Image 1 (cartoon, helix red, strand yellow):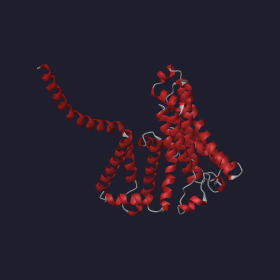
Image 2: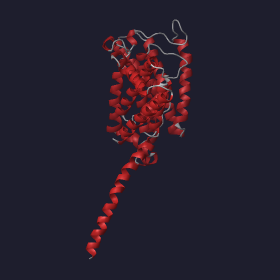
Image 3: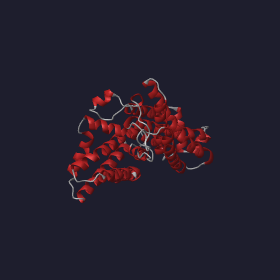
Image 4: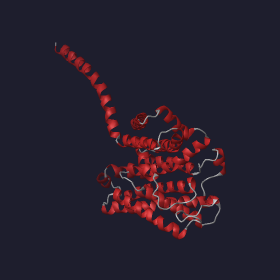
Length: 364
């Protein structure tokens, strides 16, 4: 409950700060927010695009949240997403099979690719205590350059060398039913996979022995080892699962929102996943709602810029401020506790006085 209040306050403070920025630059905040939210919610097509934009963020947010809940900081979701997406695209362009089977193979390839990319930092952390922040950042750039050379060498596009071949319809997560339902938006099956993943994430973390052991290692590694938990195995398992979740984000993005994979771009959704996890308080439903909110901001900023003189950087500033407040949630938590304790302290003197009077009567 408290985490939810903190997240809502972070959003509120971010929106207030954004309104101040709009006013300072000589724009109307009410009009700005009106077009910002209309840009993501005005019609079915825009709603579909908002949900599609949020889908990769759900996966990367879950990836970072899973690592956080188990005492690790997975800052390598971008590289895991990129390599997982590359593996899925490679399967989609290489194999010719029935669509359901091909999509299942692509999803599995994406998960395995992301998991493999996180396995190395997990192993280094478990065996040599190499900090995962350093190793995952390094793996981000290894993924970047691996895809940079592999795509032109094996999957070069017909017209551009900077992107792969277009995925055939049988290898795309888009379906005519969803496209028609949302008036031509690029919403795809990745959203449903994300919803299922949120449920699985919550179940593993809260209801399974595996989740308990992983959280125990995250809380106190020495105590968990003393209790008989295989600490090194838990660290590797946690990173592998987190990487696999980010890899699924690559599948949703490159085989759903897009139709090919471009080189020379490290997906920003991997880094945005950190913000989504923080705002979502590292819970499954929290990550889902935070990702949709971020998807709304990203989808609506272009429309706001088109309809007003407000630059799209204002939306980026709002997101940055929300991230700041979410990251410094401990300050908001302390503020809430301060007001709670202040109320308690106001009542405390009355209790003391009554107790003293009672003691005096007993003495008499």
